[in-house]
Every structure is written in structure tokens, then in C-alpha cells.
Image (tube, rainbow, N blue to C red; front, side, top):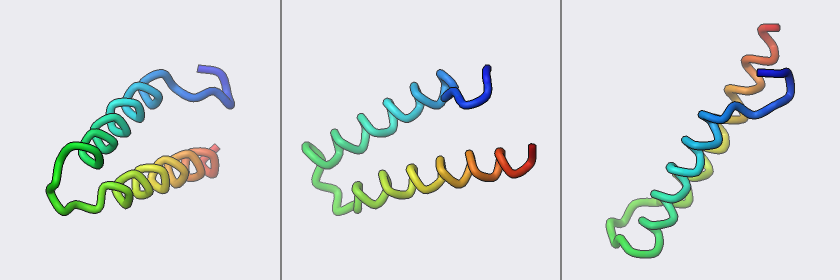
Length: 56
């Protein structure tokens, strides 16, 4: 992987995760804060990239 590129596995995992959360928002009534799960996933991804960048 070249520097500055997003890994394919990250893109696939994000698509599956977001798809599941959007499905839950639209069709499941489980009283879960699905939007907050999405925000948490974004925050975790940003933290992971920044932590990996600081180790180099």
C-alpha cells in the first residue's frame, strides 16, 4: 500500500458497517442510537489513522 491511500479492507468494512447501521435506522426499531454508532466508527477510524501516522 502506498502512503496516503485508504486500504481496501477499510473501505469494505466501512461499507458493511454503514450499510448495517443505515438498515437498522430505517427498518429496525431497537431503541439503539445508530447514528452514534456511525459517529463512533468515524472517530475510531480517525484516531487509528492519526495514531498510525504518529508512529512513523
